[in-house]
Length: 174
Image: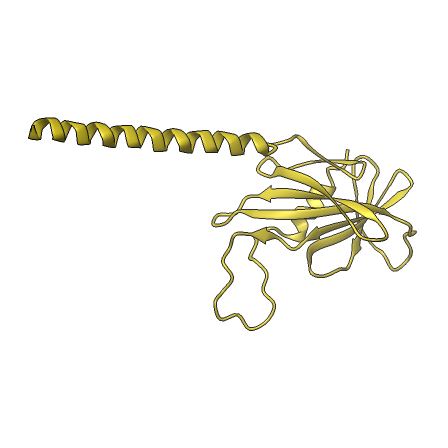
């Protein structure tokens, strides 16, 4: 009787391990189907950019206020510790470039990138392309980094993404 009971316990444990593992794999596959994986390009506001190989487009959402509407790309960027999302907002603005705008570089497709100042953000630009001026804002990163306990002021998640990384992305304009 003890031998049968021992075998029964072993069988129940094995069944539990198989069931838990199966549920985990099922959930992992379901989540994987919902996200966009490694696109060759990021298409936003009528513009197309080539994402770096280790960056992934999670989703593009539309946001709006009472005056206008714009698209925000949620870009997954590599980080050694945390899951990091870099939001990129792009929209056409009714503004001409003038002497106060600082020219940064020209893309191979003829777009002209100018520095723009905004906060809080990783980087902000004006992009002139095909007779339109776009406002491009790489907002504050979103992360699962825990907020420090004894914070005394405004806090933003750490990131290894730099304004140079965002400028390089804009330079891939197709």
